[in-house]
Length: 457
Image (cartoon, rainbow, N blue to C red; front, side, top):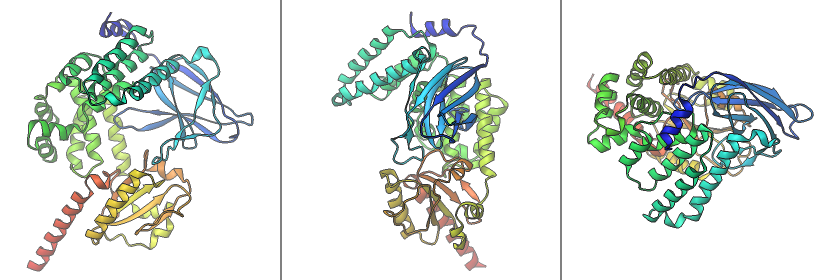
């Protein structure tokens, strides 16, 4: 029985109903700390919602409850340390967490995951199967690293695929996870793109809440607006979007791509594209918002409509955020003395990892060449600054996580752009190494034009 038929039998006629799910946890040495259960509302807006919270009692125990319709990856959070866990309708999971979080991500305020074990083997289920697959997945690449970039890796991937196809997990969520994890292996290792599309995207169901499906989708349609223009020549999407193209015209433009023949898939790609474009400085905001409103009015599916509404709410929330003066008053009073007469790049940082150091070098170079066009301030969410020196002011937030939550900062370093009127214009803005100079060049051209007008008056 092939994958498509099997999934049809598993899902046919199945109506999703929310059921109560429970996580019972224990973590020593942290009594009195708040624990939260967090869900990502959708993979497009990436908006997070707290489903439940509890306080760790004197014995180190806590409980988190939620209603859920389908298996999802949820997050158990203690302070800013996070533990991902797969939870399904009606699940009761008993978990024991390690006392000390494991540090993994040097450039992220997430810092890493709290490791946990299941205290009852009968409720590991999906988590155990996915953990076992992930272990085999990473072992595969470790053992075959020398074959990457060669045709020999394709045969190894096909052997790996057969190994897990024969294991035939009974759970549809695990089936989708392993199936699309292999799809991404093929995509990144030179398998024929058209055949990958035919097998994995042309007819199969869309599973946006399965992280393996979404990771594969993101990779297949990575940086799509730019890739489209590169494939078909010119700057069609760039020019049309910035001129206020309608969603119908945009869809007609995209129809020449054989990988977007499915209307629902096309709308999801458009949502992904405008969500990515909204945080940069290449596209104008109003045309993107116009496209989003059109999708909300006529979504290809109820789920896509929900994703679009979530994205609209996120944009509206960010647009209503206070200006730079508010941030200074609320979080960094020492910066109130600095003038805001020119645009400001606000850096949120944590550690001196390679990603941050790279961006710092770019910013310093741009400041030296465009000193009158923008200034920089930095808010550091850590504590120790003894090893850090900057040519701009830096304020320690001392683990003030309210600031991170208020401005929806999910990864660090994070960059925001405030215009010369103090208003938040881009949150986030693209990394300085990926487009800040283009923005500065436009500001310089506008400034020069204004000066010419003044001279001519």
